[in-house]
Length: 169
Image (cartoon, rainbow, N blue to C red; front, side, top):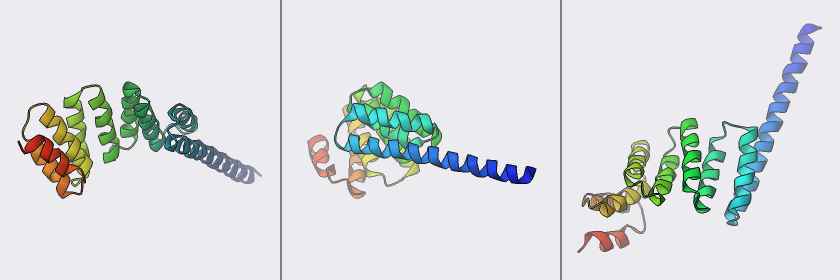
């Protein structure tokens, strides 16, 4: 009888965990819907519910960070991006988005470091090259123009605009 009880208990635990994960995904999906409608406060609340059910849900931390960024809570966004990076350290998008929030707080060196990390992970990450290039130029480093050129080579559509604005004087 013991083996059957063990099997039944295991099945119950697996089913319960799957249901919890499914609910976390449900809250995450609802958060995405609100985010897409620029209803950031509600999106943040939905992502928070998903995270409470699954504290290892890196994408939920990331999306909550994006919502906080758009709600101009840059420090809160950075905290969420930090957690998403801790959970998935090889995701270049997490670093690039954290760089964007650091930029808003005028932490340009920190933002450049995050762009460096994103580029290490994905060598042809056009948006990371573009942001790093603009930041370097804003800090007086002409090497930012090379980053903008690379961004253009990798497909960043606005590279010519920024090159003309910053590098062709």
